[in-house]
Image (cartoon, rainbow over all chains, first blue to last red; front, side, top):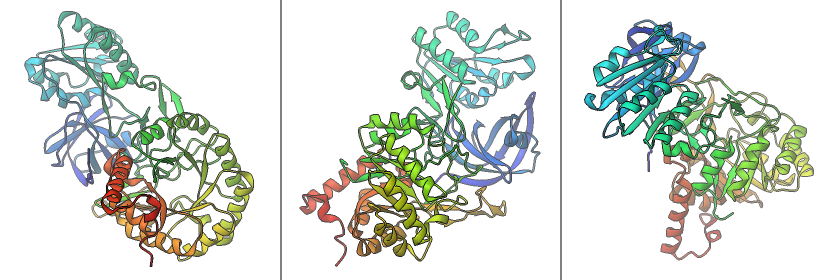
Length: 262
Length: 290
């Protein structure tokens, strides 16, 4: 694997801004570089910070879907059409688009990374499970419906769909349909349990993970998960790869590189 | 060391797991991230700019602190290759106490970061004065029995003076070069891209400077020189060795080529030696000198 190539870097203008759910905003911008489902970009808000964001739209007009949770993400959700952001990448290894019957499981803003993968699979072959804490936080339900044979939802508080979490929903869907592969993105505790469920059921899976990320380009090691770089060997790992990782679902690292329990 | 390639400090050296992965890629030795006395977050992002022929970074010496680094060293020790503990301090005493801890943790050598170009009060700011450097080396040599490497900056006209002072003070090897102080401005944002404004340039862009420094150091010194700066294939590794490097370190090459860069360089060098009738790699060290 020789991959000498500088990533693209550009300042781009926000072409459109769309509020998807409570505190969640999609920003679209014209940036015509190749990208695959599950890849991410480093997004720079000059004077504020630079953070990794999954691409929620591919193609010439790309998109990121941001939940305001900190300084950088709040600056991004406050951004209006015409505002400028820096983007570099796309980085990482995304989903390997599978053959056969697919179950896509997204929790919270995890749907942002998952949707381009769902759209890359023939819609008759894919079922989508969307989990959120409450009805107003459900993300991309319409978009998922346009690209999937079946969409079901769960909410932690029971305000819509199954009263429970996305893993419980996935388990219920697995009882009705035999899937060939499961794709997952969401909070790591969710993915940890989804991974265990897939192992129990003997279904291959791919999960997109997050870690604190500094360079994004495979150099600094700040996003190390066991010996893998989430920014390069990830962010999407196969169930087999995750099986051997002691830190998956258990531990992340802070800005200093200290171990922090999940 | 099983082979002359080493992982350079600052790349994939912050966690035990990432160090193990570099050993798997074929590195003959591993230099850790530079570790200080206390945990440090480093600079805010952006901390990296990618260029066609390299990178400019200003990480700002993020590290978990020497206490927490014990666990990482323990894990990295399973790699079965020598670990070199890199440390940075603001004073000779701080360098000495950090070096002692690294030795306790099993480091088979320590590398003193006298050359980081983007952290206030550290690195290059202490590493361009021959007397200050000599004093640090003496303190560290008194504190540890393992070999002491001094990693020097090219951002000075006094590189040879600093290196000679380090040698006289007892340094066992000189590592050159660290990154070149640099800047990237985005013309659309109309401002420097790095949050720290200044950073350090690395990768193939600096190779010509690194090779020149190693060539000069080889002529001026008796102790071994370890070459670093833009090495990413067997040709660039051999260029440094012919300039006088007894071993080479690879940093940016891990990002550009992948972790298997170490093994690839070694097989490339072996093939070159077989083609040209060399039996021992030491025959090539400094061969470019008259």
